[in-house]
Length: 318
Image 1 (cartoon, rainbow, N blue to C red):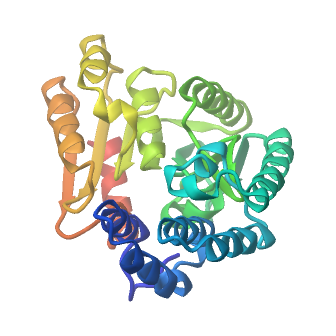
Image 2 (cartoon, rainbow, N blue to C red):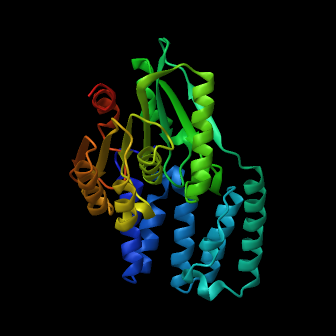
């Protein structure tokens, strides 16, 4: 988890990207280097960014050393990272190709071993039947990293299940990019939960962050996951940028009784899309709470844990 003294990583990285886009490569490199200790979970992304900026500045050896360091730390990258235009000057260097091949080998091994995971946590005071929350991590995150955001419900008698995609994008980093695969895996997870636990009727909620939020939204609206409510935290992804697809999704019959919560920050680049989606859901008859947080970037709201029981009550008790 990021230290409270530094901004959330999404906001910080957006600022870095803006500097790079403006050609201020030295400033971007220095800022990323100085910030590295504050974002230990983002080591791979920041080292790659620093290498890219060094390459842009005409410092190939520094760029290669940074790439060597990140691989030595156990990281690896998808092809798109290596094909970045930032590395144009390094493309034909033997050392760059050697590092890329090393990364590719590690990636192939990781993809061969990746499997969908479902971690299930019983409440402190178990009762039957059990209300169920299924939590979906954001892209480039993992189930363990975000579990703490949702696990407070255990003290309120809820079973909390944390799903992790099999689509691996880096060490400890998973994505929901292939929507068909995500649907198959999450449907299988729900079937497992339904078969193994006595789930309370009217008390099934799906929550998610970023691309996990988009996935939760899409699968609940389509009835693939027969949830009674959804919590979309900082929703993001291609669906939100496709208004025609959203309109088509909302024109069909929606699951009866479905309620929703959307939480978004004013500094989140998806604010406009998330707000538009919220209004469309309300017009389609979905009771909804849209919570907009002033000054928040692409992150969980600071009061998320404290508000979660109240939001859950809105979703399942009306």
